[in-house]
Image (cartoon, rainbow, N blue to C red):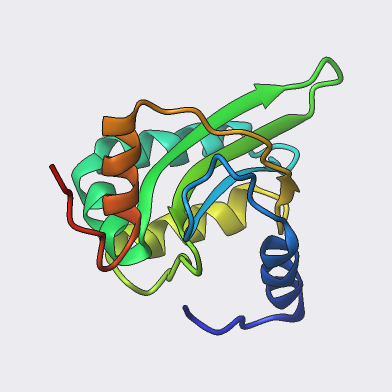
Length: 152
């Protein structure tokens, strides 16, 4: 895990670590749903950000193993008052972190993030994860550095 570079980042990691996982989440994994506001006037740039990620999908996939991420998904929502939100859903190994210097896609992703969204994330508390056994096995394998061997 990379070391936090700011007090805000350190506070986020402390909050992240303090949120317990429900028993339905496999040991060693973290299920997270977080949201952040899109800065006023940055909605169109946020659309460009998501288009960039979709266009460079293969590069994004290539970062997952290094980040110990089984999956990630991003959603957008606009409140009735016009506030734009970005939501990030992920399942990854404990201690998985994003390193903006790991690859060019990560550097570009981080630059868009700083430009388009308010700093930080609001974390929601996970309560339940339901997956078929075959999917659960694949998720654990994707998010752990040394996954357990499958047994017959």
